[in-house]
Structure formats: structure tokens, C-alpha cells
Length: 166
DNA sequence: ATCTTAACTGTGT
DNA sequence: ACACAGTTAAGAT
Image (cartoon, rainbow, N blue to C red; front, side, top):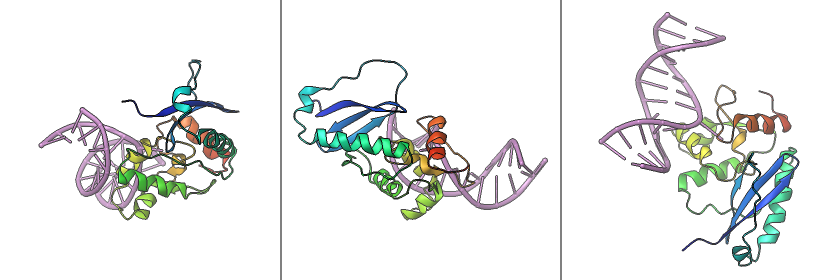
């Protein structure tokens, strides 16, 4: 049985993202792809998610705000299927305000698992909701850019917009 | 300042 | 059991 979910495009000045919702909330957010396939709303599923419209409004305004370096109110996030470790890492990242940054080590420290710095990197890469869950605000300990699954261009762009100097 | 190495955890296979 | 990852700190050059 296929799980209940709907994909909806999110148009922003920086491109068209794609949001996927489950019955519990926003489950996934994807960067704009270069191929111009039309994203289609799965109305079958969409109709069975009563809050979807409200959630999507929140997603859209939140995304636009973060893309301009402002603080945003987020829709409910569905982290179903993620491990406890990942959830604690992502929760910790949500606390980082726009314009601020932390290192992988600091995150590891904050979740009381100081030696798991490397695993923290892994959790960041597994983050299904980039930008809104600010994995881009994590730098390496030497205050250098570090890596980014979604492409370093995005990481740099987001940080620059938020006024972070590298 | 740059390069190499060893240490360490979570996750997928 | 094994290999890898968006790391890090320490040591060598």
C-alpha cells in the first residue's frame, strides 16, 4: 500500500522547489531541478489531507522568508522514518537563528554525544527538508564552508543572504 | 600554511 | 562485518 502523500510545487524567486506532504505534515522539500517537468498535484491524496492547503501556505511563506534571511514560522514537519539520532540533530539545527552558524562539533556537543561529529555530518546530509531545517548553517570547525548535499552553491548563497561571512 | 593520519559514531548493505 | 560520510584534532613537512 502506497503511503498517503502529495507533491506540490513551491514557486519562489530562487526557483521552483517541490514540497511533499504526508498526513502528518511536510515530509520533504527538494531544490529546484533543472529539467522542466511539470509537477502535478496528486489530487487523490491531496483531498485526503485536510490541512494540506494551510500547510502549503506556511511552507511557501516560510521558504520565501528564509530565502531572504528572515525568521519563519514552519508548518508541522513529518520526520517519520528518521532515526532518533537524526531527529535530535535536526531539532538542534532548528534552534539556529538566521545569520548564526554552528560547527558539526557544537551540534554533537549540544546533543550530548560529543564524539559523534562525523555522524552529525551524516545526519545533515540525510535531512529531507533543507533550507527550512537549516542544515546550511553548519560550518566546519575551522569556520570553513564544509560540505553540502544540495550543492555548495546553495549553501554559500543562503549564508550570504543571511549575512554570514566566510 | 598545507598534507597525512588516526580516532570515532551512525547508517546502509 | 564492513565501508563510508557534509568531521576533527594532532603531528609532520
